[in-house]
Image 1: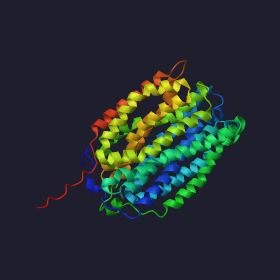
Image 2: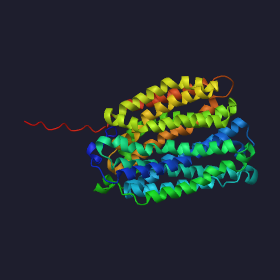
Image 3: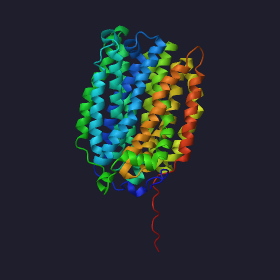
Image 4: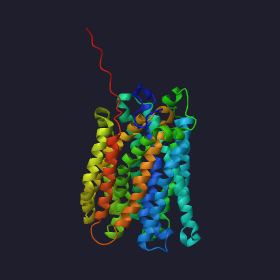
Length: 440
């Protein structure tokens, strides 16, 4: 029986370069960016407009909470998607996962843009929204595992962190694309136009993006690690639960802080500043997007540091920085001053990427090839439930009343400390180069 806390042998991932690696990395990045665009556009819409349109009988606060609850359903669906697509990936290959997950997420996102509001069809409107958000999460739950594994399993051991970081640049690109479109619409349309039809445009655009992503992915080569497997897990989830349950729980707890910090900055703070501080949504989107641009640009650098110094040290550093920065970040947000808010968001995003730039190499190295797609994806997406689904809801609830929302800072600091403890219990996995032979 495999010990759940032991990393996979370094030799279980390929160490030779392949001519198609740059193309693979580019296709994985593009597809991940498109899928996360689909996922993020919902979060931005939930913060800005979905509450009044789909929950008009609620108070403004309750409407925002309800919109964030439908937002959270996507995170609950992600582990289920990782189980479903992880099974496909471990039994039939990583490549089919990339195609089917992108198609599912794209179609669900386009459909969100077509749902009539509460004023047109009553309670059916939020119910449809809930179902489509669930399907979005289901597709995204499979996306990350397939994209990361296909790249990581083709990459050379000494540069695996760098190559595997390309899919990790997809989320910031998707976020920037989603919020760039929202920012443009917000700045050029009246409030009435934006609420009437403008918010739907980014969802409709997802169809074009999904078609482009599918064109890139249909000709990708299958992972060499999968092709070399002599025996595939019959029921990957059962094997993961039986032999690797401790590892799954530790990785989920470890990754929770990354999700919590990211969605506190990009989703909760947007709603809080617009509704409570009377900051314009255009200014808030610009502040958040600027911080995410820097984060995305520094992702490869952090990944290279992970290849040189190890995955675990960077993860521990990112957690520690997050724990130390949450109170200053909330204090800067409460000023309502754009430059100060940007500074708070920027440092939080740098702490986030210190961890998440190396996760794409770290998680696959923790699991053996026969259950890698299921194990890595389930751990990653359970972290999303703990950190991403709950954070906007909890933060909105504890930020009631006047004054600086220190309760949000305390909550985020607590999540950071939890993740720090989980990372401390995980092993290092960076392949150590063999010493050069001594010659006489």
